[in-house]
Image (tube, rainbow, N blue to C red; front, side, top):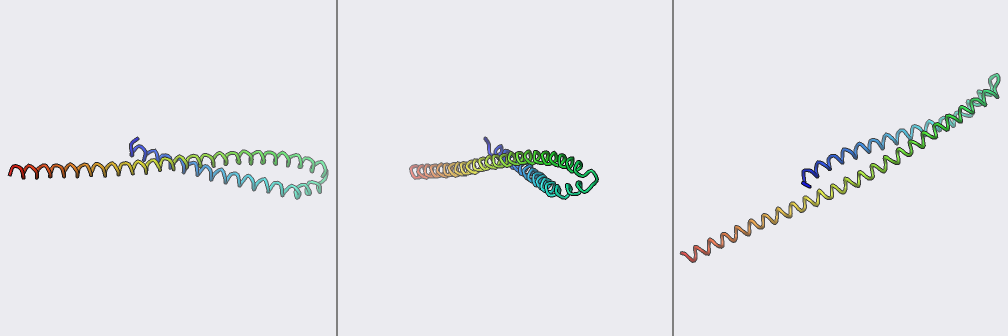
Length: 145
């Protein structure tokens, strides 16, 4: 793989990592909101059940309210579980992408080290060849002169 292709791949991986980090943040915010809503529903139950009991036909209203409340809590808990799973998947995706990016960045650095070493060897070969030519020219001029 060329250095340019590797650099393009790294740039694409960085963009994907940022996108996945944003998805993780979004999932975390949604989960926090769901948990706050669930806690608020749990806190309000006592107050609203007391109000329902105080109304005419209170026990029947309180029972209906309790049934609706259980249904809302079950739905909110299901939503919280789904969002927890979404966040876990997003965390795993971020970890995987970050490891992939780190691997590519190490490969890029290793490629750069190899290219610098090869450039150094090429320069040394050029210097050696120049020295050999100078020596050969000097030797001819000493022999012929």
